[in-house]
Amino acid sequence: MNFVLGTRRIPEKAKRVVVLVQNQIGEARFGAELFRDVLKLSVFLKPRPPPHLTIQGMVLMKHVMSSQQLSLLSYANTCMLMASSSVYRRQQFLIRSLGGGIDHSRNMQQDLRSVEVDAESVIRSITPALDPTRHKGQAGKIAVIGGCREYTGAPYFAAISALKIGADLSHVFCTKDAAPVIKSYSPELIVHPVLEESYSVREEDKKTISRKVLAEVDKWMERFDCLVIGPGLGRDPFLLDCVSEIMRHARQTNVPIVIDGDGLFLVTNNIDLVSGYGLAVLTPNVNEYKRLVEKVLSSEVNDVDATQQVLSLAKKIGGVTILKKGKSDLISDGDTVKSVSIYGSPRRCGGQGDILSGSVAVFLSWARQHIIAADPNSNLSCKNPAVLGCVAGSAMMRKAASLAFCHKKRSTVTGDIIECLGESLEDICPAT
Image (cartoon, rainbow, N blue to C red; front, top):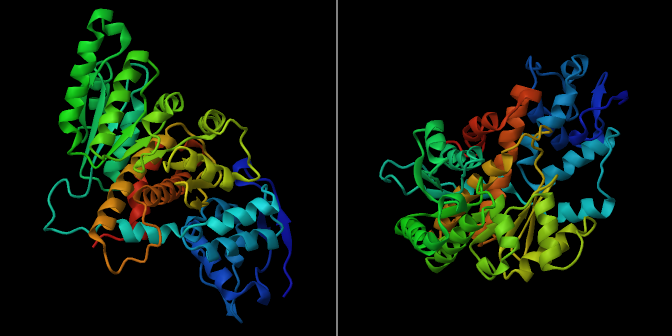
């Protein structure tokens, strides 16, 4: 069967992919499964393409080609990439077969595919069913430690994302200056104005104030299923000292911690805060990861052997789980490496990392409940709740970002992604 290829440039983050097929897509060697994937993608197109002929397992998508909407498929491949690694391989095959260009080296592609995880299955397994016999709090109680005069959006994004995914309660512990602002964003959040910055504390009062701050947080500590530390925290020395003590007490009470933003700045300069703590998650971006690698491994970032490096880094910190954010998210606890390559959004608006940290916190707490319950029907090979939480949180963030971009394109902002979290989870794990 003959087909004509045409290509054009689409945004850099989407890379090169064929966006015009003027007549028919199809050749027997591609296989019917590949084309079912293409049809799944077509649901994102507007107007909705009518069903066309199927000949020998080959789908004709004339509507898509004539309306020149195939470029949208490269953005809206969430359906496909939320599935198993075999689907991921078929997606890559489609791009290659139609002339698409892939940035990664061949070795790197093979490396990532070998650790690609079935994120959709993980999400289904650990998401608790909605049950009228359950009471408030059983679906998760999350606390965000962060928020100062300059940064009030980040803690809000993390805390509200936890609620949007399905946590029952979400708290924010912030400075007194930040509290009124964060409270005004949403009445759904429980805001505690207990943190202090250096400018408001006299030198002779610092020890007393530090103990008071710790006591205020500590009385809530055992109620929480997970802490998110760092969104909007800032780098005030006194504030960071107080948060260091909060982290130590979280370890003592066995409360999981997800560390992002300036929390990573704190940890990079004091690795002992998390070293050896299996319920700690670090979520570094490119620059934060670079600083971690230089500090812990005393080496440069190695993109060619990225999976081995993130494995070594997690192992060196004593089994802490690392979620290395990038084109493909790499997740390792020092024993295993998982990859999440679902396509998200080419729009890189600020705040997406905060959504991720809140999402990981919820799924980590759910994974922990799932593992403790020891469900005999569970098909999860991984038993580390931190790794499972990272896989699910990464996939959910990426899927929501993809949906938001389909609706808003260049005007997509963090709030749009947050509003797509519920729809993304419902697509994978429908509420009953």
